[in-house]
Length: 78
Ligand SMILES: [Zn+2]
Image (cartoon, rainbow, N blue to C red; front, side):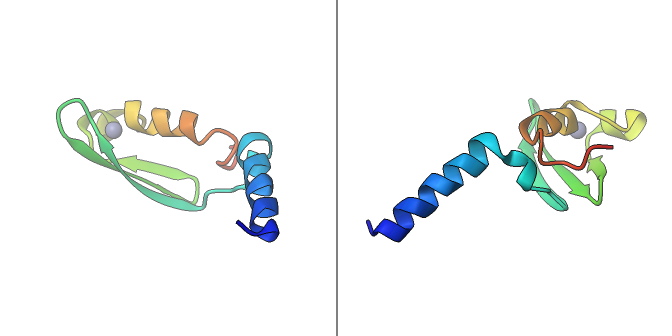
């Protein structure tokens, strides 16, 4: 591997492990394998949506909350 790429990999590791706040997610579409069937979870301009029944009644669900945890530091703080 060339020297330039090695430097970029080091930089990528630093971003991923220590400087996640440099990454801001604007929009996202995720297929979430639920316990019973897959769900489509979307994030757009700070707004979550999910096609599961719980989300429809409560506006938040295990799928959106799991993604908030996974993406911690990369979502705009509200
Ligand atoms: Zn859901």
